[in-house]
Image 1 (cartoon, rainbow, N blue to C red):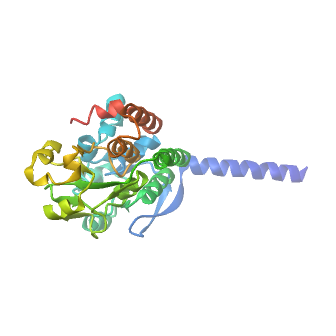
Image 2: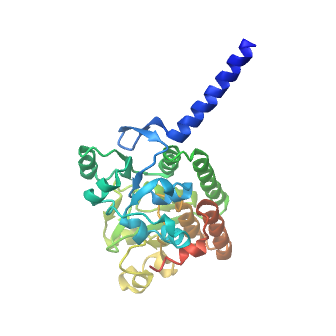
Amino acid sequence: MRLKSFILLSALYLIASSFHGRLWGKEETFWDSRGKRITLEVPVKRAVVTMTYEVVCSLGAMDRVVGISQNAYEFSPVFKALLRKNPSLRRPIIGTPWQIDLEKLTQLNPDVVIMWANNPELLQFLENKGIKVMAFWPDGLKDLFELIEVHGRLFAKEERAKEIIMEMRRFLSYLENKKGNHKRVLILSDPPTRVIADQGIINDVLRCLNAENVACGLGVKYANVSLERIIGWNPDTIFLWRSTSYGPEWILKHPAWQKISAVQNQRVYRMPHLQTWSPSIIGLALWMDQYLHLERIESTTIQELMNAFFKKVFSISWQEVKTYEKD
């Protein structure tokens, strides 16, 4: 009898402990991209997010976010579409990822600020003020998957994070398994001779699409190169980064660019505003694939695939997201 009572009490204690940990929080240790150790009570209750708001939205954890950056409202068609559908997602603006309003941030009293790791001075400034910071810099698909996984732990959405990663991998596998000729790609920024070079996530995606970035290997993320070098690369397809001040027509009509295969074959396209540090990267992969391999997948099929992905991950359709591409 005593043994049964002991077993019952032990079981009740374990259940209560688990419930207590989930309801009132437990401390967990994380490591960010700087190799910095951060201990937080999870699930986080008051986070400020400067760049990974789409990840948080996909997890269904915006109820634990108290502030976001201006970028969400200006540059994320996914967030704009979600906000239109659910206005309660609106959060106070704390500035931009590069310039944070300390007074507003302090008023929000966050448990942690989640931001990019490419501004060490700002990170140090905030930490010197006693603010806990987690900094990330995903430089490849593997890093992005880890970023989503960490956010799942932060917000007690581990299973949802696994679902999202599995869905992303499923779509990438689908694209990898399709047959198509190898393509040589160039991605232009501003000015037109500024190229995207060693951007890990973009280059990982291109490899999944049986394509290569001809500017990869320059040792920098962006590089200014001569037009002669671009002509020498002779890409099959040219993508313009989403924020360029010029469009495809400028490249297609410029006399100096006429020797390039992509120009001769009218294969110059402006990329949509889909983020690369978010599950949205899969939407970008699908979008690129339709122009890289015109013979491989019909555009109607691409639209169906994009709708399926966005509905699964964000509970909105690609058509709803696309509405904000013109903004």
